[in-house]
Amino acid sequence: MSTSQLYAVLKRLEVEEYISGSQVEVPDAPPRVMYSLTKMGEDRLLAWLYDQDPPVSIHKIRVMFLSRLYIALLLQLPFEDVVNQQNLILQNRLKILENEKLILTTQIENLAVELMIRQIESAISWLQYCKSILV
Image (cartoon, rainbow, N blue to C red; front, side):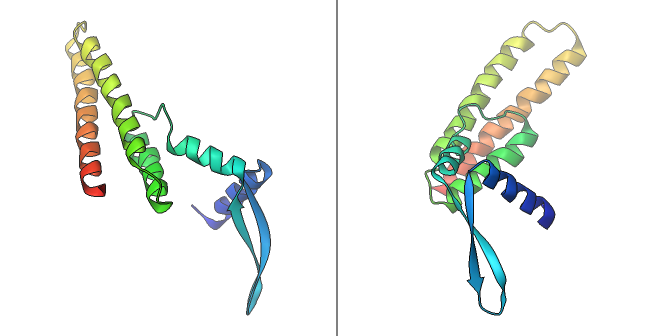
């Protein structure tokens, strides 16, 4: 993220009252703005961390799940619920795909669904690995 993107995000979060900024004097440097979470921001952060409907796409797991996990660990919050909820959503999606596969009629549809099944199985296995090393 570039500096200008970061400042735009900080400004938006401040306008939405998720954070508040105050100027801090720093020796031998211009004043800085120190941001802190508001109560509303903390509530929003926790809702995001413990999302009950996390994405199932591998791309979004790589970006969103890892971001949530990183923040939970950084703030020393329980991370198990983040992992468990992602696992639950993936298990549910896997069942849907396995049922879908039973009614497919073409080879290409079968291959496409099989790819999704194997990606989800791999992600589930990886989540178990995450839990094992983060304990």
